[in-house]
Image (tube, rainbow over all chains, first blue to last red; front, side):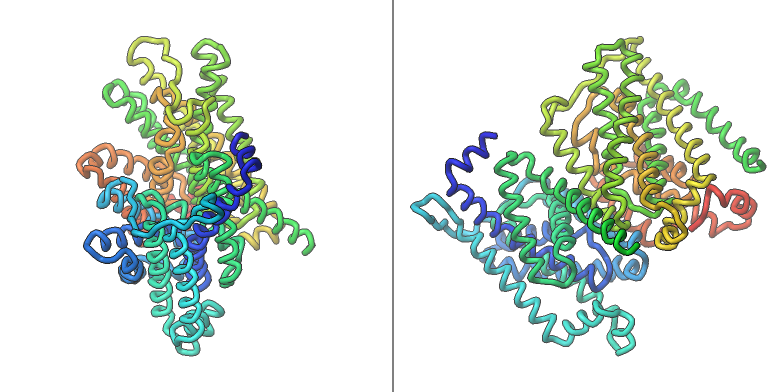
Length: 299
Length: 329
């Protein structure tokens, strides 16, 4: 493969790919943490996760077009998506939260199609991006370029992650969320309003995704059909990292970002999406084999 | 055997209408052929989704594989049209089943939700790979061979082919649901741990169930490829956003886990789609998502389940005699 040769002849290229990949990965980790939150607390796998990211991107885009500074788009997107998440919980999710996974999967699958097609009709299918107005940093005599917005996105992601962690550890609501995740029934007996916890969790997840989407629109591109890839990435990261382990989620997210970037370079950009979806299948098959081995031990 | 007698009349009626339809409505032969394909979609999705309780969002994979395999055999094997077509359909079925067996044994040891998301990736990955692979025409697609008969003969021929395939699918599924296989996959749906504890090889049953859907979907893919005449990797073969979603919707609309539910759902949906869709001016797919949410949340039983709850006395006798193949949840 010619691109592989290129990588060996110019090792500095792999530094470039690695840096870009890791900076992308942080945003994946953010969306994945939201998915893990909803999964852990409500036992719902939200297939509409990627659509939340996509909508957050559009909110930030239109906020910037209305004259706001691009960075202010991040909190605006988070706030709008929080409200939307709350509304979706009140309209749909609370009806399926106690049902089995089969129903909630189908319901979020329907939501995902609904949001995706709605975005397609309202925002048109064009590929959009938002210029942040930041420059580029050159490293190693200009061999490696890092656009500043990616660095900002990376830092913002980490800051958001820390805020989230503090919220979950310190605030009353955060503690209630964690208690519900540990044992929903015991939490209810101790007087925690499960419905409110669920609503907050789902809205919080939407807000996290909205913030991630605002970062995505500034660093890369958005279009209405972007969602599924983010859902699948989040799911992969959660499956690899496990529920409720922020460190592992971040590590898996960064690793996925780097792997994806290398694959995109080696296989060609047209196969990058195929790589993401195939990787999901590979991870699940691996998990299947591992679980199978565990079962044999149990015998 | 009373079940047979009671079902025979509607079946004969459907058969008579189906045989007369292409001659009564010659302009709509392609749409009518698609009606049978839609029924087949819903029935094959229901094997996993309804009877076994496993959401599969990627069954479209086998439809696409069948379509491409059939077209490649027709193009490269050098047979005449009809031998080529039938060998192609056979190859499509075999290859789909092989892929299902391999993927199934890899994925189906996992429980429902992991499997569901995994299948979500499968269909899209296949579409992406197909649209980058030059041997099968990459993004510009493939053209199937020209039908040798007179003009219009193609539509009639493939209409009857789709009709026969859908009927065979229905009868085969009815037969296997009535036996041990049907009981086993229903047991998996109801309580997988218990089914396993009872000594069922759950993974094997799940894989076989997936292979059955793959078999019929593969053949259907080959037929539809020839019916349309042009294969686009993302919009026809691996059309996850249309057919892939339709199968799920139609099965739950009619009533998942029943024998006639998918048939009713597919018919209602397809007629509705052909009649009203154009008035929605591009908002059809929005309506599609909304419809799924509304059905899943408010009418998880589907049309048949709703009718059964609403008019139990009308279904009273039928429910009793038909519990082996049409088990309400």
